[in-house]
Length: 133
Image (cartoon, rainbow, N blue to C red; front, side):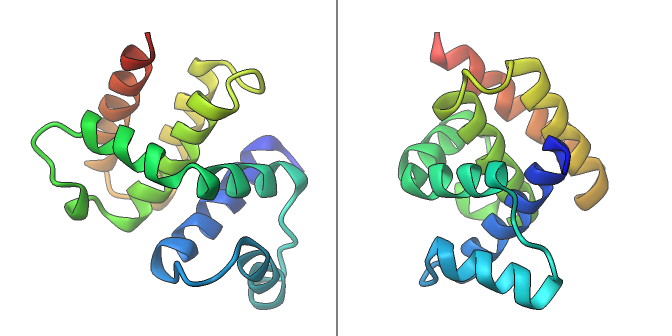
C-alpha cells in the first residue's frame, strides 16, 4: 500500500471520527475493515492515532490559520484532510517533508472535496507551516 493510500484511509477514518467522536480509534479501524473491506495500514493507524491524541492542538492550529472562517463552518471532508496534513506537518515531521504533506493534502482535496477547498486547504497549511517558525 502506498503512503498516499494510507493518507486516504486516515482521512476516511478521521472523517468518521468527526461524525462519531464517541468511537475509539480501534472501533473506527474495525469499522473500516468490516464496512469498507479496508484494513488500515500501519501508517494510516499512526496518522489516526497521532491526530486523535493531539486533536485539540491540531484543531486550534487549523482555527488560527483559517482567516475569515469560523472553525464550525469548515466542511467535514476539508477538516479531515486538514487534520491529517497538520498531524503530519507538526507531530510527525521526521516522516514526511512539508512539501509532500501539503501536496498530498491538495491531491486528496481534488479527489474528495470541492474546487474551492483546494486553495482554502493550501492557504491554511501554508499558515500552519509559517506559524511553526
